[in-house]
Length: 203
Image 1 (cartoon, rainbow, N blue to C red):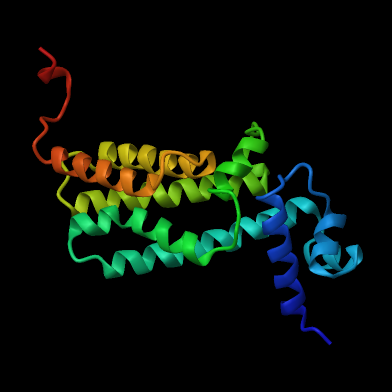
Image 2: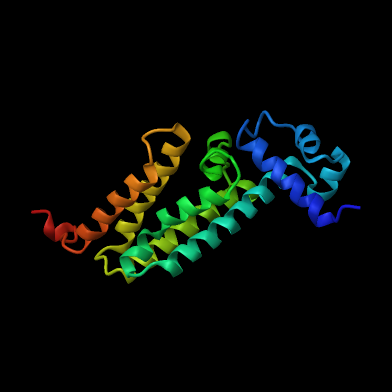
């Protein structure tokens, strides 16, 4: 008899593949159950609803992503490399993850209108959690790297990170993560020489 944890993993694997290859809205729980080799009643026993299943897929994805980023930061040899390691983590995460769209959080946000109360939507709350994780960590690493305005640098790197992930969805240009990393390096270098903007410096 299969262990409950094995059944749960099979369902999550099937849902992740179907949601992010064929689309969330068009994938019914019956198709997920069939792909996982379980009855629909078993799927509902483990997850309760399609939204809960989607949330658990994203939560697992977020944990795996965090682990890859932790490892990339630990392997970096300098403060600059630790800041840029977000792009190294994308490469290692893609190599280890199953075949899905990139990124699953962007794909979910594109299919799911932003609710009036994000906290009332557990799926959207998880998307915002992912955004906060990336933004907060980039700001901390930018400060460690000696950037004059860590918030501005983090925002620019977040744009490059999102752009790289969107380019992976589009399929062009080739190797967008490497392009984004090089551009991010230039942002970090210039951040140490740029004069901070403000009312007194605008002439």
